[in-house]
Image (cartoon, rainbow, N blue to C red; front, side, top):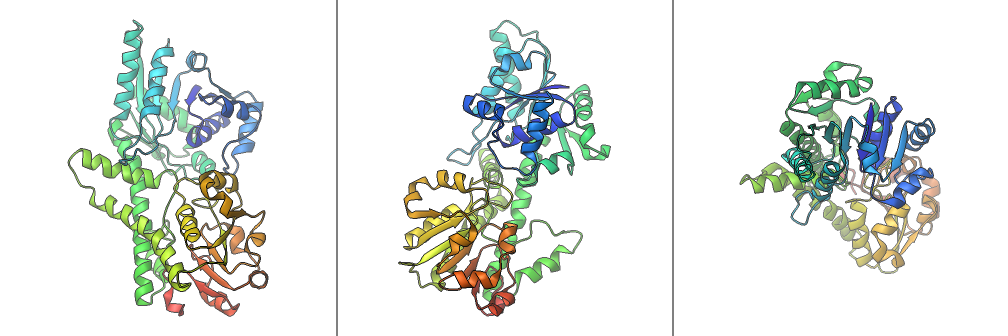
Length: 446
């Protein structure tokens, strides 16, 4: 199939590349000329394991191209996916201006039948709004008899494993109102679904809500475990034992049950807030989603307060090393990363900050640009921690787990660690002579 992909951000780039890898002809469109130029030069704007090689291979084989010419791209395409961003407004609602502008441009350019698919995360009713916008533009051109259809196909990619998630998905959700559209979408996704049961068709509004419901459910699990971790710190339990104890229950499962400094990224914070806003707009209080958001915001403060309490609220003259900046491992994404708030608070306490992340250093410099003159960006993790009085671990990269603890203690001025991801064994850390503080494991006598 020939496919047009509008928006070359995270979702569009992964989706377009994976479609191309299964033999489709894909043209990815973006108004950002510099990004298109970079992609055509082999420069990939995001870090995602396996993505760069796949892009280069499919581009070389003529199945994948990057352009700013929408009219030419949709001229002979059957499917046009909208994968632009939906950033949050100040009130928590999703900004749909990019989605509706994409729909407007489709209406201005299309001259043949087209299936327009919203893949961006959008609140219920957006796909209908896309349909209305395209119809409006066609009418203005005197082409109201030109036919098209719309569908919703939300993405469920996890940053760090997005390529693997797309190539072998848990499920594929397709929202449409016509049988032939479902048949076409099933044919497109057939190479990715080894079982037909993985492809779930439903009405458009249910598909739109499904994405928000999934992310809110996962965010709820994280916030619940963080709340349980705080209770453990008060009562003396071990959140890791509790995680194993409930995660082996088949009704619960083990995923998204790790306590830490709270969730971040481009999806969970935005989608939980949009769900809250949607409820408010329709006169309904989303009580659970509101509580999830509140707990998550409080968890970052809880970690900072732990540091303040243990260090007597004074970091003047002390070097603080920070390991991990991205919101999670295996990505360079700094959107809503807990590290941003934590670093700002450490700076307020007078700390001299040195940071290191395997992939997110350049993105962190942009996110922290107002504070960059106060921050040392180290070339490797051991250089960041050299002569440090305190190490604060925020992102759970594998290389941090594999550190030589004896060497780590040797290079630090003082062996003090605050572990925001519970990466290390508390007893092992004490054995190696560290003052070790983590989340929800207070039973080890911190």
